[in-house]
Image (cartoon, rainbow, N blue to C red; front, side):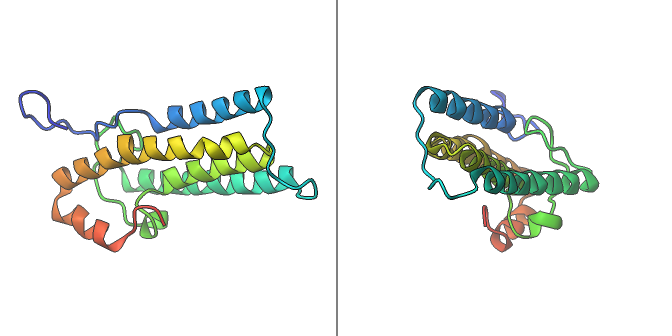
Length: 160
């Protein structure tokens, strides 16, 4: 957020791009599962259907959140400036619905492919998003919006 000269850089300074981290987790989970299958669901569970429903729910949440951001006139990529605190739509319930959508997407893939590896990879995915993205976003928003963001933060949970 601040460069070496102490000037404010108007972006979160997230250390990674969330969609790339998501894709890496999904691909790594599928590759590991292909090499060392680790199913976790009983055979009677309709994994394909259930996984599709969970995945599409996550995608729907992500799209709703992104559309809400665009309607508010602010940027989605972590590399671009945030122009406003968005409190409408899914942001009434969570400060991070896009990331929740990503989590649901990975869970949906794990169920759909009956892969415990994809569930296991949710743990490092969570820590990367939480500490290399969300922590930096929150610090940036506090600097940029001050009390307005702190008020929103006190009213709305980080996750659910």
